[in-house]
Length: 216
Image: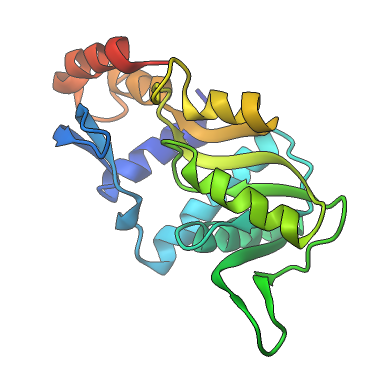
């Protein structure tokens, strides 16, 4: 595991984004961990978060010209990632969708970079549970221009089955041909616990049991 991944796991714990305990998820599953990205709420936090996304972007050599942040959670993520990439010497465009199409002023469904045919697009999101956000944004993008959506960045890959046997990340590749890259995976978090990077060893048995039951 690279240094920036270890730092990111500690960053999530420090900001109470990655929590350990007894949680009931939206799916109804009982989980020993919870990821609450709504805890990012300051300029310093979102600036650092953008840097972690930018590291992931470079690590996987994503050749995108525009970052798209699905409304609403994806908006600050796409913007902060674009800013961090610019500081690293990579200038990319960014845009985000409106919940309703604007019929006055400049109009349109997207704010920011004007999308063009053939443009290489990378979607930026927080986590991917069911793939709902991806399924909602893709038709909007295609209606705007015939762009090439080939990659997606998320903070954590839960590596967890959805309704079927595959994870949402695996389904995105199979259904849409989109590669989903995460800053860290659940395996990385387990490794961080085992190696003492974060002090939650008492939750390791429950984490492993949950992984055995629901892992993809």
